Length: 256
Image: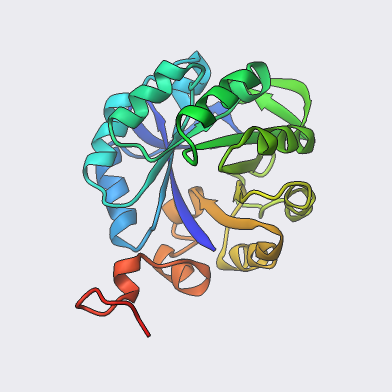
């Protein structure tokens, strides 16, 4: 299972929200690129970035900070927040982002997801952020009538590479992921699911490993790695993947 550190950008700073509440933002670092490099140096194989300003305003806001992150890393970066048209995704990919995460537009403009999947096959994910089973939009400020599992099925048919599922009531709370909701959602689709929200300990990550067989292939970890409740290198060693160069011989040849 891939353990994926999260960087949430608000005003160009690394923050964590509590249950998606912008008024309960805690700043952890004012240099996103420095923070990203720290997680990569500790063994991360992928980085998850959310443009919180973008999600709220409906357009990318922290592109400069995202570019600075990509420039210091040699691992893939996936980014969501405010991606409501093709041009905003084009700009992300132009600065070196590997995967774009569509959220609000998946509910309000599903045709956009189809268009993006055709233009960028394998590089589009959909973020489903649920509140009591219904999908939240616009930076979690609104709750739609869309049911999380129904949207996941629709997006899988449209060709997205993965679903990133967040239980908003667990996000930033350190109360553990919603295992039952994850199990229900993963069982309805045949594309990878990445869990997000609530991871507070190595035990939480080990609980998620039990869902790997039904398609939960990754876990995004936010507040817990910033507060040292989860030691990232330890978590990667226990449940995570390692970068390819770390498992190959020094000459780069394949392991027999």
